[in-house]
Image (cartoon, rainbow, N blue to C red; front, side):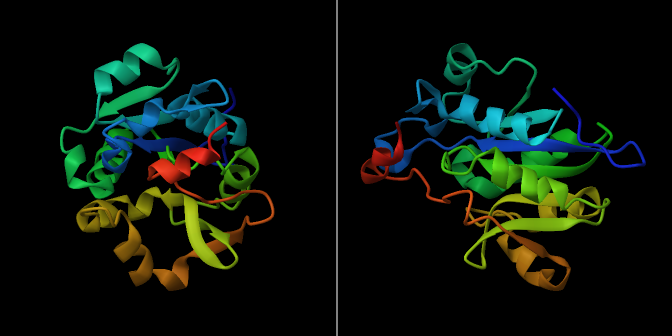
Length: 203
């Protein structure tokens, strides 16, 4: 496991948002859906680790105890989000808050339900990190997607504006001039696992 560091010795932490309850999947927590023989949460952690994140925080909500029991999250910091039913914004707030004081200068944020996004895309976004003011997003055909890298200078603003299922959408719209898009359509597919029909993407 390697830490992605710049010349100042600052690191970029990985942050996986994995608290969703899979309401449109009959209440099956997305973190425990199987893909290539292992839970989606293990896949998501592996992607960030392979991309170069040394510290990885995982935000859990629905069936958190079951996820901890069934998934191998060794080496990760698990973060409980008791407000997970409020949407992704609450998980983003909990995850960024958990990184305070760790020395991380940025967070590379991914979603547990996007297994079509692998290490190549995550590494491209990570490689665009410059400093604590960095704001970088993967793009697919020019359209912003995940993963997204938030420099620590932006965390307070994101936490203040992240509500419901919008996550950091409002913040990124307000800071569009500072946002760097990194095209990843040639190495990843940004589909979500949201409905029964989407389960066909899993192997």
